[in-house]
Length: 234
Image (tube, rainbow, N blue to C red; front, top):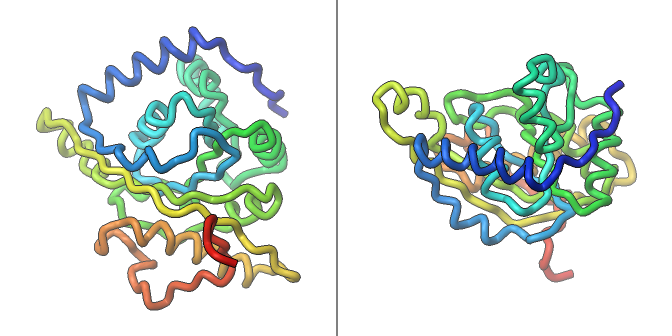
C-alpha cells in the first residue's frame, strides 16, 4: 500500500513547473483563455478527455497556482525520474484495472482539502482525439464525495507527433463547460450509473468539434435528468 504523500516544497514545485512551461512553450501554442472560467479554489472534479501525454503537463501548469491532483498508473513510480515528477504534483497511483479503494481515499481527502481532481472518464488514451466510451468511475467518485463536476476538453494535441516530426509547434485549444452536481438516485444500479456516465460524456462532447464526439456525436440522444447545473434555477 502506498502511503499518503508528503506535500513537496514550493521551491521544488516552482522549479519543475518552470522547466515544464519552458518545454511546452517550445513545442506548443496553447489557447487556454477559457481557463478563466474555472474557480480559483476547489473542491472540483474536472472531467477531461484523454488524447496523449501532452494534456497532463498542460493542464497542470495552466491551472497553477490551483492545487490539482490526477491519476497515474502505479508502474510510473518504478522510474526514479518519473517518480520525482509525479510526486512533485502529488499524483494518485492507480492499478491498470481501475481506481482502487486507496485511490478513492486519496480523492476524498484531497477534495475535503479543497483540491481539484482531474479525471479522464475514457480511461485510456484515444490517440486520434475522438472521444471514447466513458467509464463509470467518475460517477462513483462524484456520488461518494458530493463534489461538483466540470467538463474541460482539449483538441489539437492529437497532431503532436506529426508536427514534431516536421519541427512544427502544435496548437492546442481548451474549452470549459458548465459545472454540475450529480443528483443522487434512490437506487443507483449499473443502468443508472451508465445513464449518469453518458450524461457526463455528452457534456464533454458538446465542447468538441462534431467530428471528434465519437459515440456521443448524436446530441439528440443527450439527456441531463441526473445533472444539476450550478446556478440553474430551482
